[in-house]
Amino acid sequence: MKFTIERALLLRSLAHVQNVVERRNTIPILSNVRVEAENATLALAATDMDLAVVDRVPADVAQAGATTAPAHTLYDIVRKLPEGAQVEFDHRGDTQRLTIRAGRSRFQLAVLPTEEFPAVGDDGLGAGFMLAAEHLRYLIDKTRFAISTEETRYYLNGIYLHAVGSGAGTRLRAVATDGHRLARAEVPAPDGVLPSMPGVIVPRKTVQELRKLVEDGEAMVNVALSPAKIRFGLESTVVTSKLIDGTFPDYERVIPTGNDKMLTVERAAFQEAVDRVSTISSDKGRAIKLVLERERVLLSATSPDSGTAEEEVPATFSGARLEIGFNSRYLLDITQQMAGDSVEMMIADGASPTLIRGAGDEGTLYVLMPMRV
Image 1 (spheres, one colour):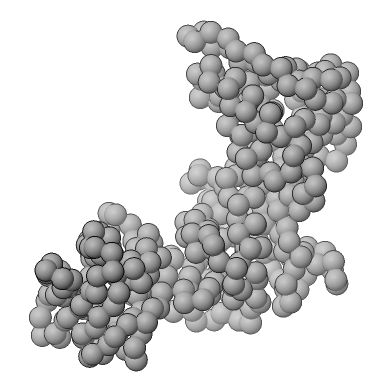
Image 2 (tube, rainbow, N blue to C red; image 1 turned 60 degrees about the horizontal axis):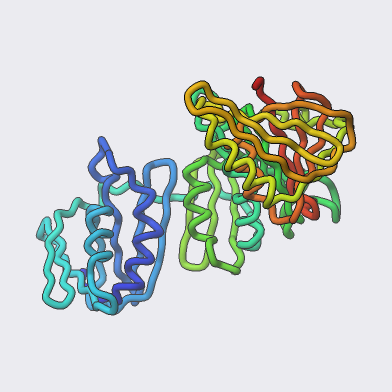
């Protein structure tokens, strides 16, 4: 195998795949990236057995072939090469070394046989649908912060993707919850999404890698599903992931419907006040207290070690004076995802779940459990 590729192209492609590779691996081949050159194309592939990423870029291929090389080491080498460098790869099948040259630099990396590299297959994937990258980005951004990290409830360790509604009103919905908060976002369902489409739970790591791929893209993402796997195809990159094998809870049951008191507050001012007041709160829950009154909300925090903090923010509240406590970090996570100028909080009392929306953003909804302060 012998090929030459421009450093920027190679670096971007390696960045797409090397994040999948875990830093510590008990299986040596999983620390490697598969490098295959053929027909003026370089294909890089990496997998952790649950998630696989394949990225293709143009290259000047002098001799077709394939090998595997340490993913993170290769990425670091290319990252440190000068901009504009032409990087030459050379591997002869009878050697256990991959030679890399760029200018006056020369590296030799130990390789492992491609036969040991797990097959990156997508067997059984049925017909899918095309989803706009901006819609996928929206669904991820509005919900991923609420994904649970508690491994015992593994079925909460991802985003629940499913279809709701019927006919022209069908929507593609994403939901995440950790038991303390819930985030729900939806977009109009693209062609090919049927109300009967089974819901799937996309793992947290897959969500993180997908978000990087749709950072700036305005292209369409090809989504294909099977009972056990999901595949996302975006331009030159294909992400194939196992799905979480579990049942997502009936989240509709925790969305309150009878909250009759509404607080409306300017989003930026409220967010900044929460951030400042929470500085004093030293406990793990970062608790802050909100005192809701007709024309203002008073935020406060108390710490035996640090002291107290208070701040007043103009607001409109439709009920009688009410006190309620929240985890400040959770409040900030929610308000930071909102695009509108104001926040609407529908409240029943100081002990019941609170419903939160961003004014003007009908596609999102959040539920936050209060805490004792």
